[in-house]
Length: 330
Image 1: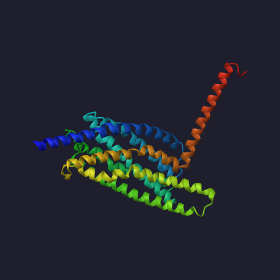
Image 2: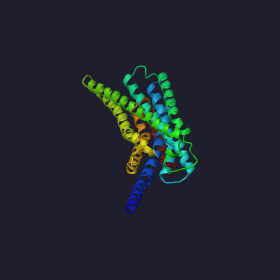
Image 3: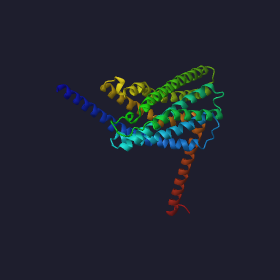
Image 4: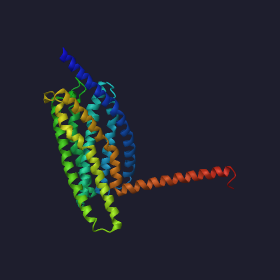
């Protein structure tokens, strides 16, 4: 009886912590990055899709914008789920479509960061726009083939046993869920190695050129370093923490995994927290666009300058009109 009471108390404690973190802390943060990310990426799309895709870098960045916009579509469903709105149909939509869309978009963005790193490092064939377009199509196709079975095989809709999406999967769907997790995580760690190697090599080369360059060109090297470290910082902050815990969490979802309930609980908490860091990339990617792409930066600054000039002219015209009505202008 005492043991049963203790277990009940423990479950209550975990429920309370779960409630505080996922129902009170995460929803406002997701709402904030949804609004900010939507504004930033709509502006980025508006600028990018007026810019000709005449280089590999621009092709990759345009695809990153599309991936971020797709990821943003999943945020409202995640917020509704965190807030505790109980609906079997909503759970099916979330588990079958929007959660898959979130991960699909995330890994598409991760791979394009890897391609940008290679493009910056090699700067020969991979920067050609035609090659980049072919690589982009292959990337979207590969990730679609990896993620589509998670949609198709989430079809065990006869009964809902718990709040876990894994309960909606068929036996084959559960196995594919593990396989696709291993594929995605492997793609991430491969991309991490590429990104780290490429930008470390580039940074080392830039530092070596400091001594040979005149003082008036040192600013160019500093700007280059800023763009290099911006993509590294975004990559390590957004994606590394989540992928450290993804495989253990995936294994813990299955009843035969051997993980205790306490370990499962903490893995879930860590997964949700690090997943939010991954979601933050929709707000940080536009910083990469601004620092890395000169065409994007010039277009944005030009449009802001034109907008400011029009506002100034409108204000000046309004002031002159007011003065004229008051008799100061004839």
